[in-house]
Length: 414
Image (cartoon, rainbow, N blue to C red; front, side, top):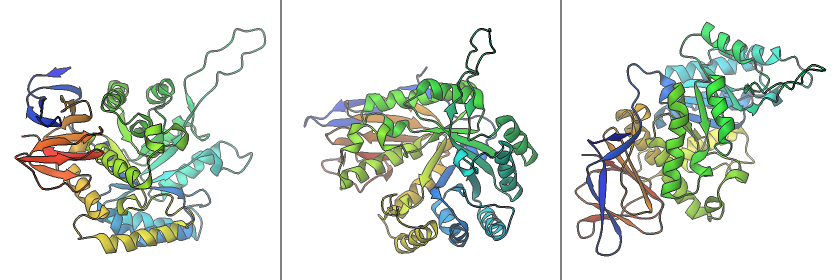
């Protein structure tokens, strides 16, 4: 679909570098959300990706302020060994939920099949979900789903077709939806799929009716402008017809990451990851940020640490970085502030003709996003207001700002 009111043309510079030109036309692939919206349609979720115990919950409750200070809307935890209805977990859970809610942060709890003792009745999962919701949790995350196999046919009958429904850790989706309805319209069910199995993801979206289904296409797609443009367009083409919110994550199994990610050294990986993060945060929908990432700590940095120790390390890093221009924390904080102020989570995706083949560009409301995924710098006229960038940019030269490879820039569209 084409919107004749917006787009961009880019004129190559005489140096051979591509140069951003005037905004004139666009191709609209996702319309902004109309009418009233709910928190989960545009949330940034702080994701604690490893199993959390009672000391971990206590540490999160104590340090929840830095999650709110960052600008996150929710925190997601997985607590397989915790019974939220029994002491001492009950006090820790109540404290975390209370302190999070006081700061405007929602709490989502992950429930997966391996949480259940061997041979446990499927009702165990629903009871566990109910216990968390009763303690004030705002949602249940079912993690990854596996497609259900076709049921075995009765003897002498024709083979039965697969239902298309998924197994979500043994949780009865109908029962879960009923539980959520009992606990208010703002409680949610979320889950994950993978873009490397597009047919399965489509069934997941059409049949399971989760509020958010995140997928990993930003890191399972080659780091190339045309490929990323197609992948992002497809994400909305799958979701928009059924009214599903896009869920964006940069977490993916190493086996499904593309070669142009896995072959990077640590410095190059961090630069590209920062660019991909700013791309992700500019896209409408819900974005997931792993614990520690907003201060520069990766999963590898904290792999041997308990959740409580990791929370303390993150809190110390926040204390050291907050208020210091150019730190990882302040970059994330600025991005989330702009995302909220400009309502990017419920905005548009309108592709624009990017400067050269190595750049990706789109409009979201009043924001023009440029992602340089190519090997050569891209020039942006110094007269354009640059609101944010994934890395420090050099001062303008000859009237142009140089955007290096693996860098994302947010600019005013006007």
